[in-house]
Image 1 (cartoon, one colour):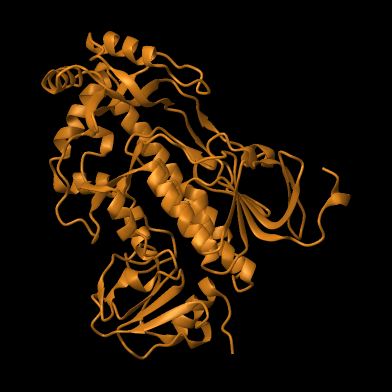
Image 2 (image 1 turned 180 degrees about the horizontal axis):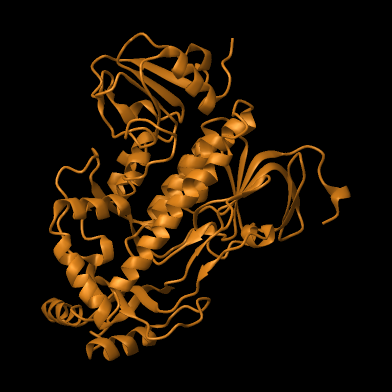
Length: 484
């Protein structure tokens, strides 16, 4: 790229490659802070097929924090927060620490549409049919080259462009891990076999073959999952005949599958980017990590990346963020992704038909009858057990705060603007010097068992106490210097 042709001034503060859930969520989070955002999406139209995805508890909480949950509930179906870990069918643990302790099944196009609409209503620009072809960065920004040769100047570039991320490859960031060893076919198809016959055969085969199921989806269609038998070319979509062949091989019948709505395959490739940031270029979502869909964590992990990154990058652009703040994005989210990769590796082993893994699965199934074990595994999948390392302090420090009752209603209703919040039961504290970045609610009735907490915009507890000087130090750590 010829640097002499670089535009002199950036037209955008952030260019985001990819308008999936991660990219759209990040764009919206940045726009809450008046950051100029352009989202580039390779596809000219949104996906047309309807794939159901699950929002876990933590992602549901984040949607509530931004006032999006009611709209999502209209499009989705609430289900018990149970049976996630390696599809072991145990009931939900008692009294999960959330006001939103359920799974929300929702069509993926619905959540993408809602998040993109949310971002554009806030002022983000989305350009479809455009993709990053190259870029160069310098001390002042990034020059992005599109596929048609157009060049854009931006202060930061974020790759949210999927597991085969062009941004990550051009950045030269390593993506170590394991390639796929097994593959699974997944799709939505109509069937001719009677429902009772299907249920009986699935129960029989499912004892030894995992993952395998045919589940009623609605409108006469079934969600069909069956082992692919071998690792194929991920770039090629499977055909109806592939499904028929594999169903006959595994179950002895193809159930009369026909009229597919969509067909796909997934493998168990597991990879994690070595770095989430190089200079002014960052990675989020599947561009930073890929893993099998077991447990349904992928979309959730990416959306949570966006929530962690958005306010920090906005603070850097707006000029108030302390220098180390943006570095905490990788420091906090990289270990979370590593843990998700490990638990999906474990789940894939538990789905193996081999005698050893089957024995371990039987043992774990017994152990999950203990509430503590069941709760631990659900907390891991639902991402409500995450505790960022903010130093020594009470167990709540670094964790997210549940949606508690406050004088003005519910806590999450106070977080719609993406700002910090001082929740003060003492009525003696102040955040006046940070009023442009941090809200203050003095409420002695708040359902807290500590004097006061400082919440970051992502809902994690950054400070606990009742000392003003200590609070000021932590306000400066997370939100920069005071004004005035």
